[in-house]
Length: 493
Ligand SMILES: [Cu+2]
Image 1: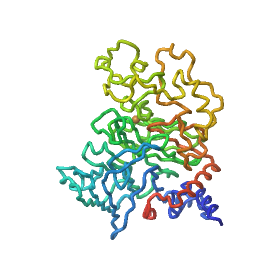
Image 2: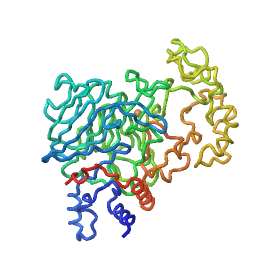
Image 3: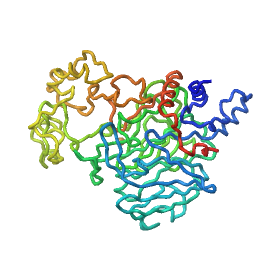
Image 4: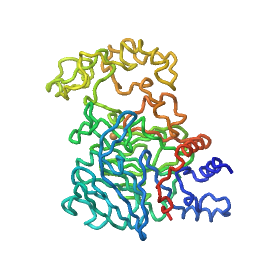
């Protein structure tokens, strides 16, 4: 049997495809097992599937006399939010957020935490019921870990669910020092899921021409899922009919109402683990508050590339707000540094988004755009929309055929109070499909990436043939992709 064929068969049988390990197959969908009763028993004993954290690695461990030993290094990292946008953050083991840790309920765990930051820090295990001196509260449960120092955390975990770890220095959290910590239950939750994903929600405030977040600023303009902003977030790939769990963790300055298109889900877990089934409410939007986790589950009955996104409008944007520079629709650029009176709403001319005000209103930054420079470059920028179309339509955007699309702006648009809106979602002309080619994006509608920003991704519910095609591509590109490098066999064993 060819490798590819064997892979496809395995993917089909599993529903977990490339992400699952062979041992996870045990006791499931085995036609050799005769009766339905036996199949049901087998299903109940089926171990939990590993959690996949798109765009974030898993942390490997080594077994030391029955103790799972992990090594976490707090250090400065360069994190690429989207092509060309690299931030200087603080993270763990080269990633912000840090790698996902997966253990089983009942495991004894040792985590060697090393501090390669320029200042002291301490690691808190959020929601863990562990001895006080392991809690990581600086000053009260332990001395902070000095730069160049280390601290060995060791505990046994009796809980199950979606947890997280983070620096307990508040500003350090806003630099990226956190990660997801999954405790798999001894017996898989019922009903069992075919796919299990984790998404960590974060936000950064980054001034123009900066790569370093301003952790004292409350105007967040980069909203990330697993350290990426749309359209660079990696879609969740599921097969039609799969039961899917998505675990979301929020550690930032805002609460995020996360909405899933086209599907109704149940909220089955919180930051304190699995919740009793009687409490599972149905919804299509779940509020993931600061320091909370929410697990949602649904059966993917409806094929489609369904958006999953925070529904706060400003969280569906990149480089949003005055701190990030120019709006592109006005013909003449935008003024910066409006006065305090205008900032307080005492405006003398035009609305906040008018040509005269622009994104500077009330912020008084004095940086970015000025009226001296012609900056409009988007396809939707009023006067330029028509003249710019032909050039944009042919050749500048490989992979996208615009043909002779009429402009998206009405000829008399400026006569309508409130115009322009949506200045940060310029549509097809902002698309970067080619730069984002990866198996998980294969087959998306051309130009899709022009409409995705901030905390947005897709749940792609694919019919079996398309699912197999994409899983084969993933396997081809990342044959070694495993849910837990070096440790996948330990899970649910
Ligand atoms: Cu949000």
